[in-house]
Image (cartoon, rainbow, N blue to C red; front, top):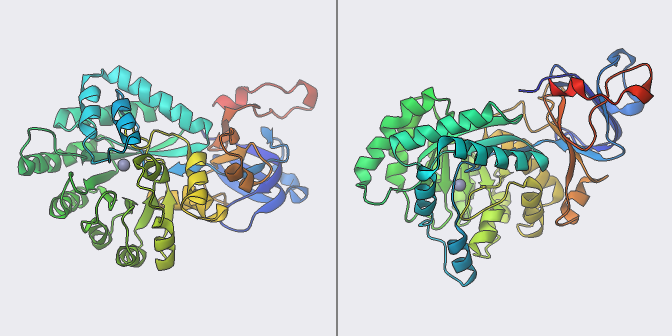
Length: 415
Ligand SMILES: [Zn+2]
């Protein structure tokens, strides 16, 4: 995990999320954490010499926290995608297609595919990734996906949170009760392999509320936090369950109603919206954010990156849709993609640039964060900083040197 000292100077607009934006700002990171933010002309002299990056007047925001991805898969869902374009609705059945292809792929192939997706996410400013299993659906196949997630986590600069989603679908030919028992019996091994969360797809065609309750209660007893795919296709009662069990998040929520939104607001369960999935499902229903906002629920945004219903690694694209389709303000959408994404993962140290936070930041390819939303289809992020180290971008950090003209080395950024 990168961890360093860094000065980001000439920031046109610093958007820390913990307070109002600061114009003409600078940010100092020490040992991977934000040590100082403020007006550049008030930069403390005691900062001394450290590697620096010149933002050149661009806006700087916290790195994106993508709290919902299914990054580990093999194969294609293009047939299903084309069918949907002709009006065939999504029913969750395509998961079996991806399970078959994923089981056939070698672990090395899965690691490589997942690493490429994490790299694409990094290039668009994602510094924390939640990654779910769920395309294995046997004990061995699910634990192999956790192995792959661990291998990727050790190899990419981003922070990774692993989620066990053995309850993604009932595998074809399996008895329901038997499969639920198998998912529950796998929880200790999933925990031992580093999973922090357990998720259940609770919807028509997937798992019932009673099954989800059984699985998430057993997961809590094993020390795994709860998350729930809820109200995507039909309103079955998954949202009240997430609130009752104190899940960290309830995700999708395309069918959320006022009662469900109020339950999430009361329980503090974060509502994770995935507008690229809503777009790909072609339901044209964009009331979710308004319903949740009216109830006072906390809204996070995520990619739901998966091969069937949301094939994107790009949080800037998610933020654009959140504004243009869900009707969120730029400020609300960016907070949802950073601070509230971190809240959905119960990480108070991520998703903002207040002093003491982990120094994960994105230097935008724009002087104002509104331009990130308005400039459709453009590369949104120029440089990415993780733990006070420039890990991706067009300009390497400069080492301190008495002679600035000879300081092009980027060696200190690769630690
Ligand atoms: Zn999902």
